[in-house]
Image (cartoon, rainbow, N blue to C red; front, side, top):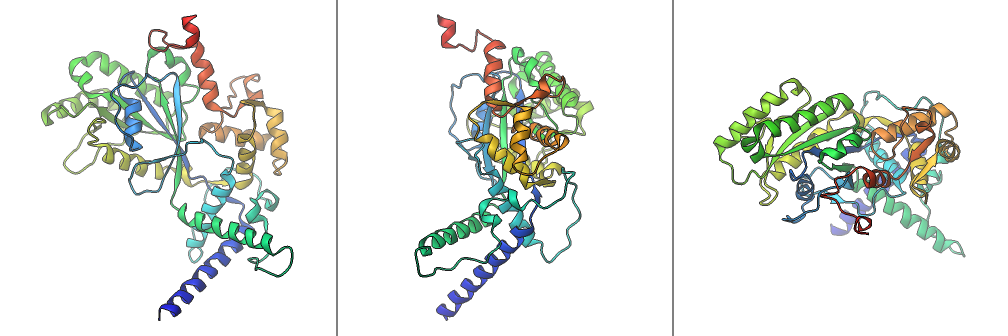
Amino acid sequence: AIRALLDRNKRMVKEEHRKFKEVTKKLEKAAWNRSKLMIIGQGRAGKTATVRALMGKDFMKRLDSTIGAHLTQIKTWTNNEAWDETTDGLLPHNADTFAAQAVMAELALEDSNPPVQETWSKQSKPIVSAMPKFFGSTSTTPKPTDGATSAKKKDAYKYDIAKFYKAKKMRNQIEMSIWDYGGQDVFYTLHHLFLTNFGVYLLVFRSTELLANEKEAKGYLRFWLNSVAMHASEAKIIIAGTFAEDLTKKQLKKINKRLESVARSHLKRIIPNNTVGREFLFFPISNKLGTGVDDLRYHLERVIRMQPYLNRQVPIKWMKFLDLAVKEKHKYITFERARSMASKFDISSKSEVSEMLKLFHELGVVVYLTATSALSRIVVIKPGWLIEKISLVIRDKSLHHYVKDEK
């Protein structure tokens, strides 16, 4: 009976793998499955500590103030556990991951009739040449044979199977780039360069400040709410109040009432806290004790997964371009260089290259500004580098010291 069960499972896996390879032959586009999470708010409000708490890291009493902004790449699987950090940042295998997720999603829906989804590509011709290597094959699963090529075929089979199982694991995964913005006034002049619609905003404020310094605290909250409304009017906002461990229920209600008076004109964009037993406009959390963090993480992930851009169809050839761009040793390239690189994946028109780069900018993987003709000729493929360089000029020297300052 056990032998029969094992044989049955083996047949099922083999059939599922066959379908996996079959779907990859015709795959051209896939759901984006990526988002930006932008952490905004007043300086020293506990934004970086909140990011650490969401990622399950230990609380640190002393953290350096964020200079400009800090980028972190993470992955999540909807189990509301601490998010996994991708320590190497944006890796050059996006197309593999992208296509693998798409294949598993299509296999899951093969017996249904999913609705037609909006796409970001104006071209629809096949892009087999742009597929990841293991997707490019049109042959059946390789079987070991006698001769000198047997070992190579075995390796190819193992690689293909490994991708298949990885795809199954990643089926419900989304990737996020967390942008932790410095909250000091001096950085406000650069934030508008990076605030985009394709993401969710977490506005962090110090709960106790809204009690002790109401006018000033309201001023900062009003500034950030207005900034998002101006630069990312379609984006959703979640508000978190830190240092809530010592507050009573009465104090929390008072804070909520004051917050409502500031956020009245932004309620359509704000996701309220509907946790059982609470009806607040914000999420009271304690990064020190960890209380409220799980609720906040759950709501953030739920809201992110509901955003339309997450499921829009994007050409895999665009991801192949991104893979190539990430491998570049340079921090930025010219538009013409980007166009030359894109032509390798059958992305030939100037308009499509521009459309692709604008999308990647909105999603935070590159910086491509088009306000002037001079700016539109440059593509920054390492956003963190640009932030660092700008912050050398625009920063609060009383808080943020560099070695050069001491010379």
